[in-house]
Length: 375
Image 1: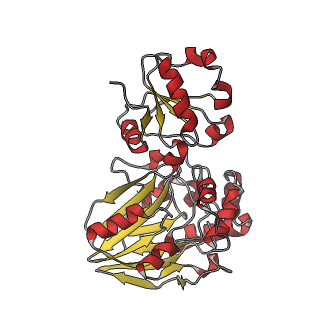
Image 2: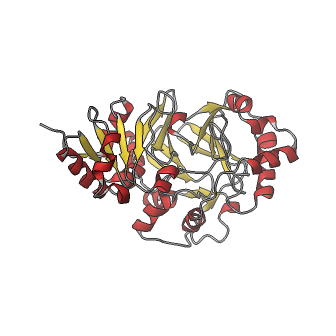
């Protein structure tokens, strides 16, 4: 029997990981494909033919498609790819459609655990590189930078029978809508964020203050104000071993300081953080960031991590000890600043409450929270 026409996104991801996806035909517009596409750890041949060109003129493109390999068709929502998969099957091709299209790909998550005595989980959003951390000690837990889709976080808490004690946002997110406030409200626990990032917010919160400490179970989180990506960016140091940096330091770059329109001022704050605030910390401290630029930053265990020593040796920002040269380098390595990020910031301040369809639209695409990474 032939394979079902639709392939669910979870099954597709497993095949992608095993190297069993040989050819992807993406039917979205060229600019959409250029900005954001399916990415796996193993190479996949991929062809972009916009649906408007393909529909009704399939014969013209058939020589470019393989007959000896399965073709996975992808579109924005799953409808166009299903129709075209049917057309290709009728012509003898092995074709399947990604169910739900890029909408489904956009909300796919995987959870990985950091091995060791502490229970540290990364909940990773495959398409965007957004990372939430769930920390469990005894029967108490904290969540750092919760995404708005909370099912995997809830499942972890339930599996361990852990009571959620605190919810932290390391900064005001710009690329995705935070689920932190909703999660804290649901659990009846404090939601914490630095006041410098939420001036004028339409909701109550508990202010994160530099130097304070939070105890949960047998563990301790120390607050380290680390501005630059945003004025309120804050890192959290767990038991002097693990540093949750938000977007301040990532695996291949540091957080861009221009999302508030004050690039020189915030770049100066970032310089002070890298060469001042983080300087006393030991090289062996393990950095666990909130974003990854690419799925290739995940290691064999599915985790995004690096030591502070590795960051100091590999990221150019740590080598730039002259303030003016640092700021100049930052300005030269900025990526595009999507207009929708300003709307997302307003949502995360509680000043806008878009419908679900608009939230989905705002979050489409990979995150652009960092600067151009190391080569």
